[in-house]
Image (cartoon, rainbow, N blue to C red):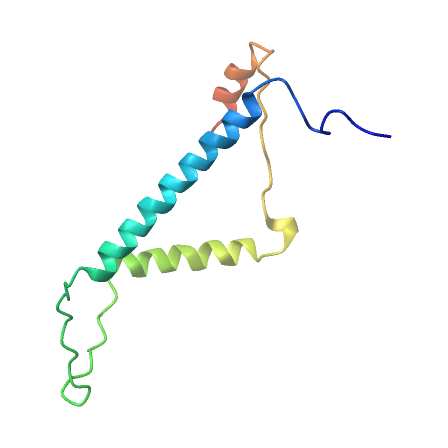
Length: 115
């Protein structure tokens, strides 16, 4: 069985134009990347690196005192963890879900927000 047309042959030039422009863009990016790499390699600039200090001549750092805010935060965190790790029957787990369709839900929420 002889075919007169190729399997993927089409009368529309869209596929060929897409391929041509994709190839052009790829070649442009390839040339641009090669130019960037060649400039980076052949540019003769050596930045000065910082001098490393001698380990024997360095003195140990003193341990800083913890700030007052850090101590307060640690106390609160430990207190909250203790509450969370307490028995489940002593924990309060509640929620209030207002209904957008109910016009009274906002007033009920405001009246019960402190509870």
